[in-house]
Image 1 (cartoon, rainbow, N blue to C red):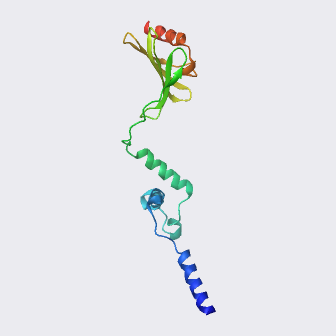
Image 2 (image 1 turned 30 degrees about the horizontal axis):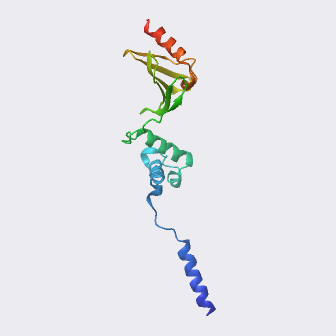
Image 3 (image 1 turned 180 degrees about the vertical axis):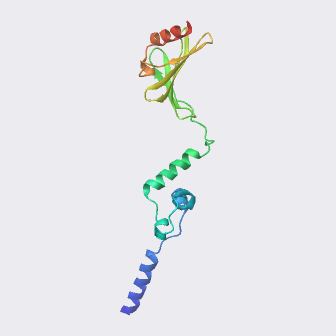
Length: 170
């Protein structure tokens, strides 16, 4: 009887240790590993080198690099950008922050009853590379650098008017 229990236990242990069938959750990583291991993506190995070295498992850094390359080369997704959500801002205005199709952060401030300014958009292309587009009530648009503006939501409308008048008089 003891032998039967041992045999059943051993069989259960073997069944539990076998690997389950693979699923699609690791498809991208597996694909990246396969891409790293393809002959076209690795350096040619000299004839006198170790043949097992050519079939080695790629490092985590190599896999991550291949995944980055795939992401950069992928076509843009057809997922629409979310609609902006506005919140109250000073001087009877509302403010929202979104990301445009190029991945730049865009802050939009709309003025409810300013006589000259309708809306202002500040686009962050980098930490120190920002542009300001001012939409005037008369239909004109003024585009300028946003130097000196750290937070569009708290920038006084007088500062925005000065930037608009300075750049429309050119």
